[in-house]
Length: 224
Image 1 (tube, rainbow, N blue to C red):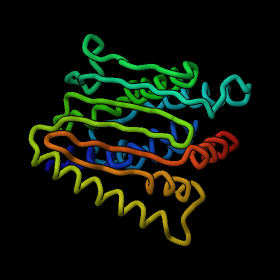
Image 2 (spheres, one colour; image 1 turned 90 degrees about the vertical axis):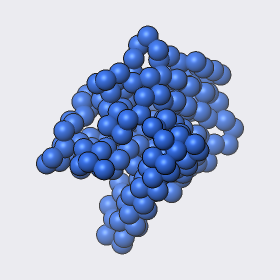
Image 3 (cartoon, rainbow, N blue to C red; image 1 turned 135 degrees about the vertical axis):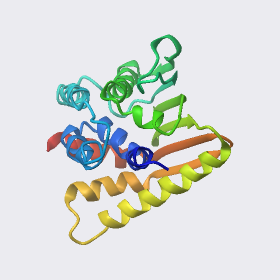
Image 4 (cartoon, one colour; image 1 turned 45 degrees about the vertical axis):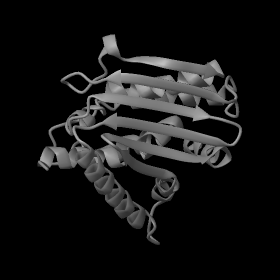
């Protein structure tokens, strides 16, 4: 695996945390963490962090104005293909479901659009992913975030699953240390909720956690 691909795999390993933080309006955390890989020596990619900040500010404003009900069920699902530059191809990418509480669903779709605008999906292109699926949903009990992407072969998918899980375990150990910061401890909650699987040529990154626990993070991040 090339250095470029290795950097991409490391970055993808934290995707669930990034999306979780985005949904919690934690732009500062996303901004700080993204320095670790995207702007490190030898990295060929630099994230455009402005979409993260813009989305976080929108979500924070909505919450503080009490214009949304965080407890309402919603679901948003995107199916798309990536172009050669690692962005969603407009002609072949669309939200196939935006359901239930439309305000929350549209905010969730904005989170996905922020990820695309930032250039995040280019890390998937670096490991030859073309087709992706993205789902964010909330029911009466849980919040679920699922990203899946198709690789070249089933062997590649299995290899990525192992690598991603190993990297996540490493970060979990680091964030479990006694001297971990409060932000790292919050990230640990999200990391523990992540699960990465591989089936045939498809890799799935999932984050599932109780709604009350997720909302506690939302409020904490908004108040920072």
